[in-house]
Length: 346
Image (cartoon, rainbow, N blue to C red):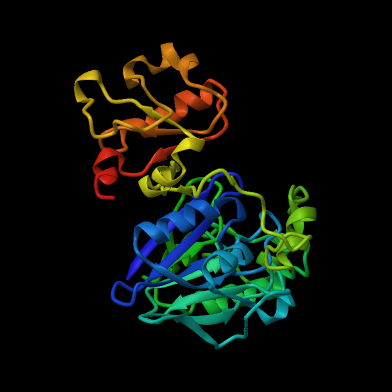
């Protein structure tokens, strides 16, 4: 199985990619709206087809990317039926099985943080994705959004702690950089529900907590009740001057073929050294040569009347040029994917 744990620093959210090596089918758990280009890039670079996107619950601290991913890939949206959200293709119940060819997850209802919290257990019980029900050395709050501390205690102890001790716990969030735990660890060391804690201990602990109102709840909850669809039902605006794809490394890229077809509308900035220049690109208009080592000092020579696409032998050095252009105030730029090596394949 292909497995990746991804992180959104703003909301401290973990997104999980699970895929089968043979079928190349994938599912995403808890995707974040602002990270859609990262997630799509990873799918593309690993040659995976997204079939299902599922949220562990209706989040209060970030907007899900479920609807956007469906528009981009045609995947199905899954969420607990108890949430009652719009745009959901697969309303889930306790005991359901969800997944893709080669990857199967058992659905367990784990309410208490919200009514619609679910945990997903890999078929061999080696992993459980607990959402906000159980965190690493903590758990989700129970003081809003139909929260109920007693229900949360039951969910954790009767649905998660009954899994094998070596079952790896992957939560929806961690605010201290911790990436995973295990059932044995949390049963022994979780300060809220582990050790010898009983329901009374847990409920009184949770009821005594005084936490600030989630900063994004007024934006996130209404949006998540639409599965992340914007209120106007329209896709957010994206750069329209080129067919840009952002790589998993975060680099905006265009294909050489697009540049060939649209070359008069852009400036091509070749950042190779002088001794690398040959006649292979002769005849192109709007082509300028500034070696990368000189670009910071000569960046004002780069025209601002057109978007800029950067070029080098392999596309590596030219990707660094984008940061220099951005720092100089350019707003429309992209790297030519694969550089000259890819260019000559077209």
